[in-house]
Amino acid sequence: METNKEAKLLRIFISNTDKFKNNTLYEMVVYAAKRYGLAGATVLKGQMGYGSSSVVRSVKFWEITEKLPVVIEIIDEAEKIDKFTEIILPWFKKLRYGCLITVENTTILLYKKGDKKSFFSF
Image (spheres, rainbow, N blue to C red):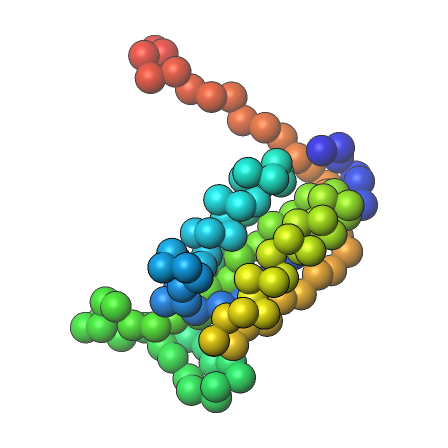
């Protein structure tokens, strides 16, 4: 991906407990993004939030398995994001749970690949 290139940001709002075909939904999306060659994906776990169910969820130190909001962000070239969105939209339409998916235009200021560190490098 080139620096200073127009791109799109795909943002998906779901819950950390959402499943699709017995798999965690956010993991399915990230692995699918990797399979389809997208530049990268990040899953952000929310501290507090609510959605269409109007139930406010928040982190409480004694509730480790609490249902919490999750945001998946994926940035890549517009064409790649558009194609990927077409692939995953049917998954979300079949969900029993609520979700929100947004796409916005963005500009990549810097995309620098890191060097893979060898296990034995000193």
